[in-house]
Image 1 (cartoon, one colour):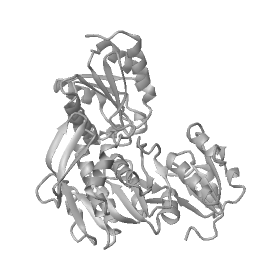
Image 2 (image 1 turned 30 degrees about the horizontal axis):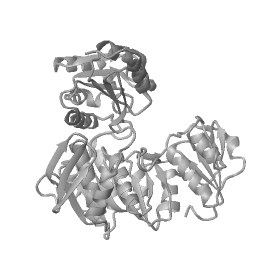
Image 3 (image 1 turned 45 degrees about the horizontal axis):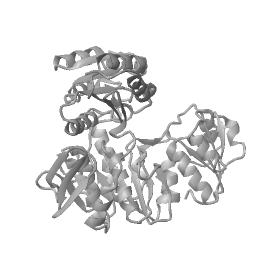
Image 4 (image 1 turned 60 degrees about the horizontal axis):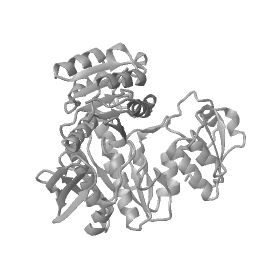
Length: 469
């Protein structure tokens, strides 16, 4: 067991949000904690330093001179990293963050794992808020920042641990998905599509990984699955645990009826109870439906669930309105998969009606830089009036036959009647939007990175110039 004989713990890649939170939690439990990272800057560096954790800048073998009892190696660390190589050469005890969480924070608790290709962060955030709002003080680990909770990770003495179950691999030495480490009592499986083309060869490979998660749900647990998702259905035959399907279609045990999509609020009925949630779009109805089904299973009453829903304030970078200036609304969204983009734009169309809708997309994920979604990517922008695509990140690092073809993407978009531009960077994109903008426009920026600070640049430019009719 990892917990045997451990007094000092060193984190390689400590400035990641989850790594930093775990490091602080370990220190609070009495362990001697140190760490290193290549990029040491606020807010995480300040968060760690204020709690007395020393951070070494850069990865060096010398950072391990004190011979820590355990080294936690971050997911972004690969072979060739000097510090990781030193850990292997010196035969130090090491693990991934997922393993640390399993042994020190999850074991013995009631673990609720939210998995799937899309909607994990929103669903996990909403589920954690239902438990928090109702006084259950859960531990949680979320790949985003819920506005209500003000942080993406917290470790408490509660019996509940709510975690976003990422299918990405655990570490360079463990190519299993992270979620296999989370000791689930309940798994929510929202949907399943091909993604992460850098580590999965095809849809079947992803299905196999999710089947591993299903195999570890206990007989006294529950597998909550999207019953409308065809790619999940083959995984359910012979499932070793109770299964409950949720969704909008016939045949789902937890079926939403009386669907209402209007503006900033969505509503549905489940088992005779009416729920409303201050989130727009059908995708968020499904997310809230999964949360309601899970919370009811865990003993939370419909009224208590609705009380939490009513006070939920959303998540940063998920249809997150960054501001309005010059009559133009600027929205930030993490979407980087065609389905996520499509569903977000559908929701925004419901919310904003006939207002002109811009989609500004930065293809920087390991999947969208490739041509695996060449055709689908153009189709995902169907609800947008204007589409701007930034220069594909690190395109030269991919074999020519695997690269996304921007010229073809532009041609497909224009053939579909869209105003479409392929532009170099954030500054050029801001200039193009400023030249074509109209009062009432809605600009949704899709990126899983910083995108050159485009949101603030656009808002500042809009504030500096009069609006156009």
